[in-house]
Image (tube, rainbow, N blue to C red):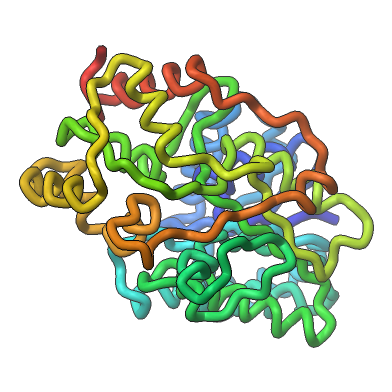
Length: 359
């Protein structure tokens, strides 16, 4: 028997896959023009993330989750369905600038196909990775605090396509759970850089926000707090929780116990040597507009529908306080320390890639 992982070519999905490969036979569905190209792409990605791994434990199958049978032939789809006993669905289209319609195939249709696979031939445990973004606008609806027991509704997901389609993806697995499929839902927040080697994703929101702040020479004085954790901690929590007995039907928030204040992050950026006076969020957006010709500022403006919930230019954008008490009790793993040394090394990495100047 084996496990199937989707989204293994991503940042969180790759770390999750690398952890599972320590003890499991893992099959991954990966997009590619050729079978060999898909295989080589994933193996290179996992090597970059975690170094050597047991190559014999990994099977790569070329497919497309948004197509019928996940883009697999009927024979391959059935063969995998008979062999796999657990599914980790991490794949998602993450684009805060894209409209809802363009994200439906990657975040909703793909989830529907994964659910169908989990039911095919033999029932499989499904571990679905969603996002706390489903609660982006919960405070505006009178819900100032959310946790694992809070039931999301579509209006809570705010005004951008990504969070709305993550809610709709959750809806697919909730319906399947109501019909008897053993489903566990995980809602990570911000996926920060690795706690030990400081590897980070070029596309995560924190990196983009910091790059834009350095580019315009000011930081937003935001009142928001954002749930999240380093990528290795998030992946370790998901794997730990998925192996506990009786987790089917439960929801977890694999984040640090307390959300991270946006202002704290910029304090660490300043402590690392970057001169970033704090300005009110409305003024900061005006600065972005003045610097819209620059790459990071232009990118943040393009993603403003989601970034606004981190910057809070208006009270309606203040996100709820997100709790993870039930999750951290069930997975009492040592929390990494997000201190000055951590952020300094992260910023050195961002600078080394040429995204911000070195100090």
